[in-house]
Length: 177
Image (cartoon, rainbow, N blue to C red; front, side, top):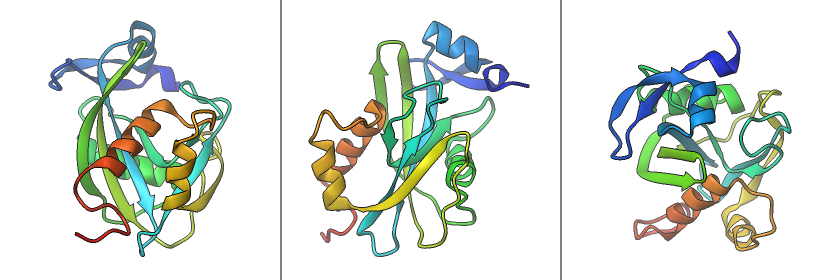
């Protein structure tokens, strides 16, 4: 089965699961769906793992991102998606993943409910070659600076979610209440 034939969960605009469709149909019709994304932080919470997507990705090819994430499969819980995507994209397994917040991303025909998580890890990162070309640990202050540069090729949904994460009144990584 090709990636386009995978069944993904369909959501309505209010965030309720309403059925399923193939990934191909969801993309072609701009259907509401959901995705989970995990910010991978160093254990000291001073650095975040940033990577560049392959040029073969169906959405935002070749751009930078600071989350491991993907579409919620039909019948799959977003928490399970977060763990699965972290393992698939970055090879990080058996690490607690903590839910942070939920958001909506809507730009053109890309419309979805984002479930955002964080994980803390200092071990080796192993890229899935079909999805990630390179990656590195970046200090959070540097990420903040780069996100202020609209010319930096960063995935727009990741930019939105990361800015929401940085702007949340709750303490962020490296900050104390």
